Image (cartoon, rainbow, N blue to C red; front, side):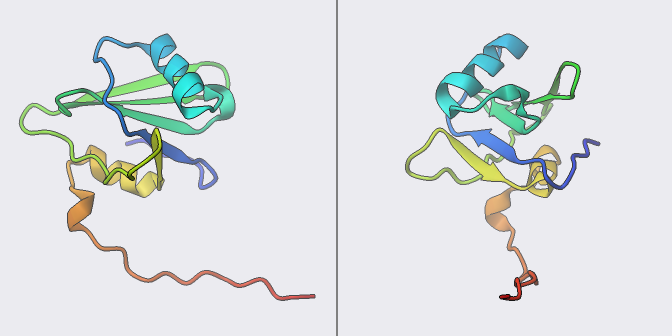
Length: 120
């Protein structure tokens, strides 16, 4: 099970990537298509063309970590893509659901309480 600090952001690529890409190739995609630096400590998620494999890339302080998960039966359900853009921001909890094979289009988020800042 992957765990990330609450401040870690997760970005999912909207385009499918070649399954032969490794750490350097995926880091280059983050730089060129996302316009982000992969050394920033955030998590980047890439799906293969058939969506039967997912790669999770992040920098862990002293080196890159690349996690690959392959579905033996079926495919991963990618989050709904926006009309424009190269990546979609999601929560770390949503990433865990995707890795477990849950379709996010079939789920519903309950209302959450968020504190409001008091004006001075």
